[in-house]
Length: 139
View 1: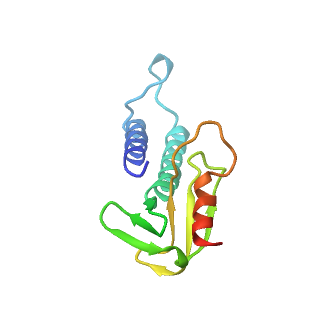
View 2: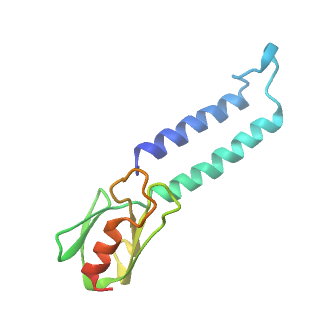
């Protein structure tokens, strides 16, 4: 979700937008694409790319051994004790249910980190990892 999805979405939508501006696509009877479609596609490409970048690039890999949180950004791993955790929240409105861990003090990754918990099909209730992390942090 951090690398593959943004790369595929941004590059494919970008290629489609470039194709529209280079007149690679034609309507019925060979008619050129209307100018408003090109600009609308460009706007959607820019806004969509920014949203996907914001939602996916900030994701971290998180694991715990019960005594601390290990946060990995695919370059470095940092051990953060549970007493540094101020709150654990979840956004259930986004399909990957991103979980945010808020820290009392700044860490090498900032005041909070976001990760994607294991996927569950058809479940709108809070992910169990949220209550597990809250319990381990005593909040």
